[in-house]
Length: 289
Image (cartoon, rainbow, N blue to C red; front, side):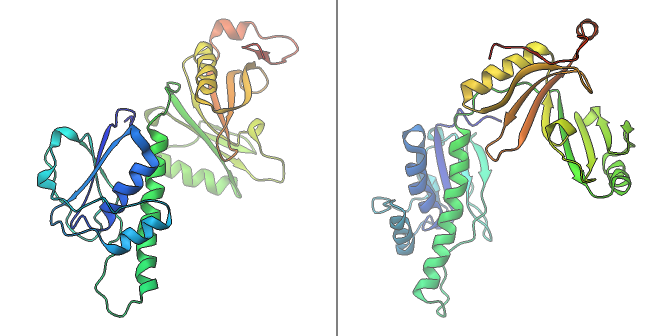
């Protein structure tokens, strides 16, 4: 489900005093003018002074905000509702908006044993948890079109190949399609999954020895298109599209995710392409580099 169409957010909790007020102010700061932001509650009260204080610590001013009843919100002005209740019953919002639930513990408390700093710490925790979720939402607002995957591939290192093969045969509902002394490959078409366990036997494990994540696409043209989409999206290309012949012949593209993990986008060769296998088995690049 794409978030690109998100134009208006409504944050809701019971009192519209702390969590939803923090979310409203933080969202304006993080999302900017891309999204209209509102907040409301089922039993509105006032903006909690501790919420104002901890928001000010990160440069967000809640002074102009006020608690509002959800009944005052026009459903036509909202396309996404985010509820923040954890222990309480969340307010009900009538309308056709998309609904997300971010359970955040209520930082407000009447416990007289808590010091001012302890109360502030509770509000800072709520503030930081909401801000982190908003950062993810902000990153999802402009995700470009990606490749159309036909299969998900993953491989993991294991200490004991036999024991791990037994476990994943149980988990995935059947034995591996094939195995060697170094790996076992599970293929589950109904899950669109190709999963490999690779033994950690002291040899180097990297993308050439099946330690990575990836998705299969339809054909060579889809691999090349994925390359151009990745470039347009600003994603890091580790190796440009090429046809490889050693091992399993594939059209493949290697990307690097933000944490440095290698991601393969690949397509299996058809019979005509397999017939063109070069004698030297050297890879053939598919785009000018």
